[in-house]
Image 1: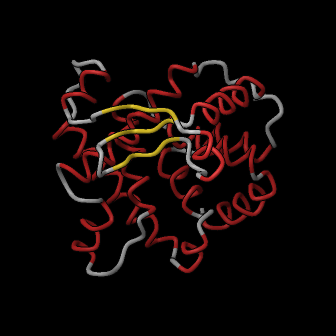
Image 2: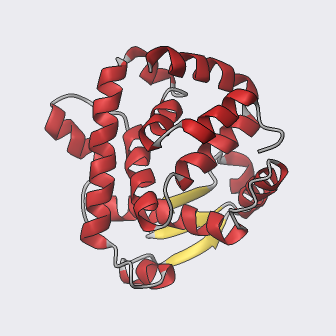
Image 3: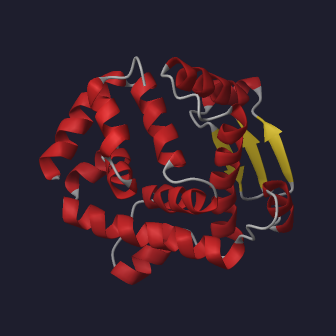
Length: 209
């Protein structure tokens, strides 16, 4: 992990799945007003729902391509040049057309970043599959279940941030391929794109552990 800030290296070496989730949630302004105990409780609920959706809908004996087709994904496309400039996402699910769009330029950039940091155990193939699985989870939410934040709202009887949909998606992907890959990729992207944010995030994270 050469080239990574010392605090970022500490996070990747010692943080578990829940801690990575919380650190990524803390980058969102709205979570600054929520107690850490509440965040932990809601993180656990979202992760559990992500695992439940995986168990109910995903057939691990099939290939990812087979599962995308079986579960109703109509097409996988690449971002247009306009989308690359207007959208900050590395991938996007369109619920109306049941399609997944991949930002190939962003994934190429992410792969280059990982190589620069010496994290060569993630292939370009891994990156694409991780993002496809993440968006497949959102497809399952929309077409077979309910968005995780809405399920949580019914359980908790108060509004829940849509950010917890990504926490559930992380758990879904972790269940499907390898632990923490989604969180690690998001964290590395954050480190590279917004390096100044890491220090304040890390300091707040340490203050609540």
